Length: 97
Image (cartoon, rainbow, N blue to C red; front, side, top):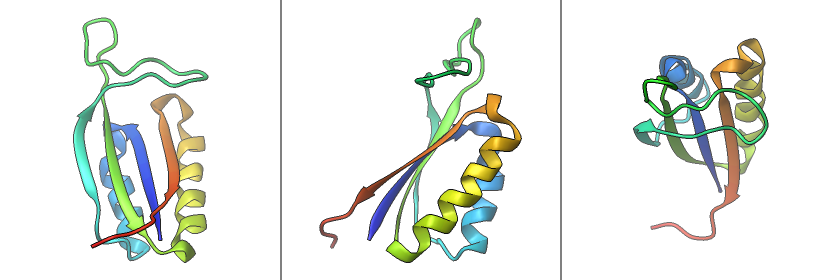
């Protein structure tokens, strides 16, 4: 199993949820408001007067077989509007209960 952490502009929430639904990824943890700044380019998302946008984040635990397709779909979404900001990271899940 893998853990996929997705950080994204809040405007992407419904689109990402639809991608997950279409790919039978039901379970996730969602953080409505997170702040951050990309490591390479893009504007900060701080929720401040100078940088008013904010991010959200999701963490989903999925079967290994679901990872490549989900990352591909998220990458395609990111390429459509790169300035919005979307990142996904994958970790191994050693154990669960």
